[in-house]
Amino acid sequence: MRQVVWLVIAVLAGCGAYQRGEGLDVATVPPALHADYELFARRCSRCHSLSRPLNARITADEHWAEYVSRMRRMPGSGISPDDVPALLRFLTWYSAARRAPDGGAGGAR
Amino acid sequence: MKSRAWMLLLCLVGVLSPFVAQSIDLNLAGTLQLDYLFTPFGRSDPRPASHTLDGFTEELSLKLAIDISSHASANVKACFGCHGFEVGMAYVDFRLADEFNLRAGRFSPTFGEFGLRHDPGNHRLSDKPLPYDMGRMLRMMEFGRSVLPSPYVDNGIELSGSHFFGRRLQLDYAAHAVAGLRANTDTPYDVDFIASRSAAPYYIDNNSEPSVGGRVGLTARLADRVDLTVGGSAIWGAYDTRARMTYTVLGADLFLRAGRTNVRAEYLIRRTDMYAAEQERFEYALQPLADGSLPERVFQVRDGWYVEIEQPVLRNLDVILRWDGMRRRGNVAPGAAVDFDAGVSRWTLGAQYVIERGYRLKASAEHYAWWGMRSGADQDWAFHLGAVATF
Image 1: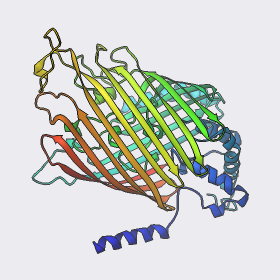
Image 2: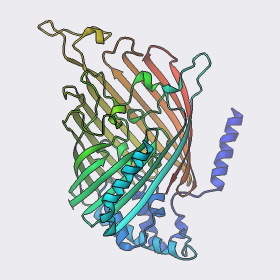
Image 3: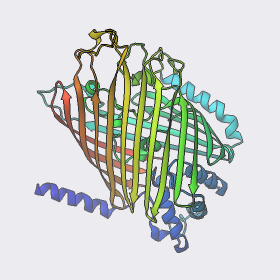
């Protein structure tokens, strides 16, 4: 039993030492967009992981607008029309940061 | 089979290519999941592999979403899994308003909460809940299939919509008419899910009568970090070749998100007619009608449930606890592997570890407890180890 406990502790420590989650490290997001990112992380992880939108090869703002609009209409999305501007603000910044040679100021890649 | 699937996919791409040429947006997404199911059957209990899909199973899906305009979009999804190549989606959406969206083609008819996340990349455990299981539950050949194997894909149309009352309340509805579940006989005991997913005899309605159903859901933002969704679903249709044997599936679902904790719960029940008429077809005595003759049909009831908690413990590690189960009640064919009343209760403890964004490991242990089974052990263990990539 004691071996199992040590094994669990070792696994947790290993996981904790290497933390690359599905989302972004909030510290890499500009402070003005923290609330927008929190909203994005909350709304867009209900049905799928955050890697879906964050890894999507979308660059155009119009494309993001259609994408978010389609997701908003999914049953139980919880994404109200009022949420859309904040989501698009974050995604527009993210796309631009991702295209930047250094992955953006926040290392958004 | 393989070449036919590729031909079908090429045809779909060809049909949609004019839309692609003038589309605003095109998004390709995919998921690959490889799972290993280990079932420690003892030497004294050498159950065959046909009792479950143990060993390696792979699920691959490639989805192309095309936003043709702000009112129209098309989706095509090709899947490769235990059934070989399949088209999991091939439909066009036309939206007049948020409250009015018309979908036509091949799609998953809206039912329940689990089906809304119809992709292994969206689930934290390798295994589906028992009422939605499609082949991974132990002793599936003895117990029979689940209430509504997922993903349930069918041809037809669906009308759906969503309306927000301010920022805090969202009402959804969906109503569909599809070909329906089927059995390739007019004297069935149950829905034949293999026939429902088989090309023989063709991907067409076997009885020319559509199945109808839908779902209504209400989502409330109870607080800044607390959301609650409740929903109710139903499906009704005939499944035999003469359209005389019917099935009714009802479901209730709940999803609660408080902080980073997700709680999901669903209950499903399916009432399915069985062709009767002859006592020899059944083990237990049939109840004669007033005129002394035997009824043309009797029914069986299969219901199932799950309650699941997902709790992130680190930024890249989630722990999942699930309790699910399934029950079957009804007359059985002579020599059946189950009693009139049989069932299973299962506990699952699992974890999901994010290696890199889009790449995850899933591990879980499952404990099965059976009742009403006429052979085999009362309890079983199963272990899953899987890797999933979303791209």
